[in-house]
Amino acid sequence: MEFDCEDVRRLLGKYKFRDLTVEELKNVNMFFPHFRYSMDTYVFKDSSQKDLLNFTGTIPVMYQGNTYNIPVRFWILDSHPFAPPICFLKPTANMGISVGKHVDAQGRIYLPYLQNWSHPKSVIVGLIKEMIAKFQEELPLYSVSSSDEARQVDLLAYIAKITEGVSDIHSKSSTNHEHKRVNKITVVGGGELGIACTLAISAKGIADKLVLLDLSEGTKGGTMDLDIFNLPNVEISKGPIERSCYPSFFYPVLSQLKMSQDRRITSSRPSLGCKVVIFTVNSLGSSESYLDVVQSNVDLFRALVPALGHYSQHGVLLVASQPVEIMTYVTWKLSKFPANQVIGIGCNLDSQRLQYIITNVLKAQPAGKEVWVIGEQGEDKVPTWGGQEEVMNPSPQVQLSNRAMELLRVKGQRSWSVGLSVADLVDSIVNNKKKVHSVSVLAKGYYDINSEVFLSLPCILGATGVAEVIKVTVRESTVTEKLQSSASSIHGLQQQLKL
Image (cartoon, rainbow, N blue to C red; front, top):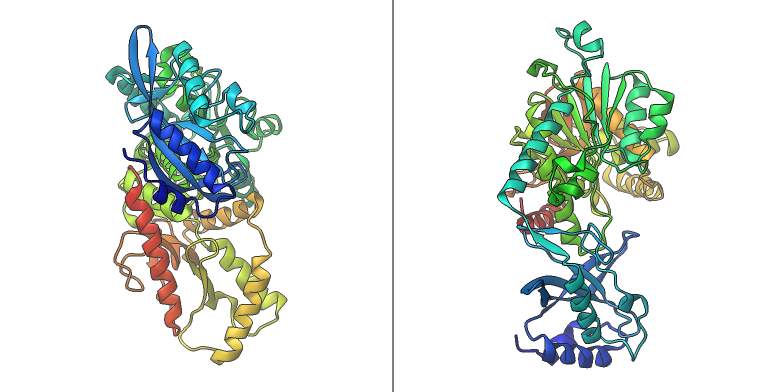
C-alpha cells in the first residue's frame, strides 16, 4: 500500500511530535508496505478514551520451517516517539490466542523492547523485528479446528443445564419443590455489580431461589464472602473445570465460565425456569478501540445468551452490562426472544433519583411519577414531564427541571446504587406490580425512530416484561431530536458489530 505522507500528517494533526512520527512511519512503510493506517478511539484501562493513530497488517514469522503471517495492530500514542506503541494481536475468527510470556488473553503484546523504549534508540522497525524474533520462538496464534467448535457447543450445553436452575442430586430442594413454581432468578457475573444485585435482591426478599453464576477466575470475584456467610436462598455456581476436557482454544472462555463439574445435574421442567436472568458481566477491561471492546462484550454474550435463554424461555432477560442500549439489542438478537421480554436497566436509576430530588429535595408540587429521564444512558439522557395536564407552566417547569438535573449530575452510578435499581425492576417483574419504569426497550416506532435500537422509555413492567410503553406528551421538539440523534449513533455502531 502506497504511503501517503500528507494524509498521515493530516491524521496526526493533534500530535505533539508530528514530523518525527511521520518520518518514522515512512521508514516502517519501506520495510512493511502493506500496513493500513487510520484514526480510531482507544479505550485505556481507566476507561478514558483518546483518538489515536493505529496501523494494522501482518508480520512474517518463520516457525518450524513454515512461514506464518501474524495479524497485528499498533497504536501510536500522541507523545510518540518518546512513548512506545501499544501492540495487539488481531486474530481472525478461525484463530485462537496462545497466552504466553509475551501475549495475554486479550492479545496485548509485551516485549522487552517496549519496556526499555528510549528515543531515539528505539524505533518501530526495531520493535517489529524483535516481535518477529520472539514469535519465532513461541507462535502466539493457532488455528481453531472444527472439533474445537464442537466441544464449545458441548460446553455451552453443559452451562445451560447448570443455569437451568436445578440443584445437586444431594439437595433436597429438587424433591421438595419439584412441582412448585418458585420465583427463581439468575444473576450472571460475580463482579461488584453482580454481588450488588445479589445483595439487593436478597434484601428485598424477592426470590425463592437466586442463582449467582460467577464467571470470575479464582478469588477475583466477591463470591467467596457470600460462600462464607451463606445467604439464604442464594446458590453460587462456580468451581474448577478440568482443562484436559477442552482444547486450549477454549481456555479464555473456561476462565470466564468457571463452574463445578463435581455436581451431577438433573433436568427440570421448563415451568421451573428463571423468571428473570440478569446480565451484569462486562468484557470491557482490555485497552483497545471502543468498537473492539464492545465487540469483545458481544463475543462474551454470544456464548452466554443462547444457553441461558433456552432454559428460561418464559422469563425476562434484564441487561445491566455496558453499553446498556447496545448490549440489550445484542441480547434481544441472540436470544430471539420477543422484544417485551428483553429489557435494559436504562435510565431507571436516574428517573427514580430525579423524582426524589424534585419532590423531596426541591419540595416541588408536581407528582414525582410524572417526571422521567429517557433516551440514552449517560450524557445524552433527556428529562421529560408526563401526564395529561402540565401542573406547572412551561418556564418554571424548565427551571425546576434544570435545577434537578444539576443535582442529579453530581450523583455517580456506583455498583451498589445500580444493584438497588436492578432489584427495583426485578420486584416489579416477579411480583407483576405493573409499575412504570424508564428502561431500555425497543424504540422503533416511537419518536419517529425507524431503526432497531433500544432506548429508555417509560414502561409498565409486569410478569411478562414490558406490558405497555407509556406515550409521553413532549412539547419540545429538541427532545425528539435528541432521541433520534442517539438512535442514529447507536444504530451506526450496531451495524459495525459482528453478531
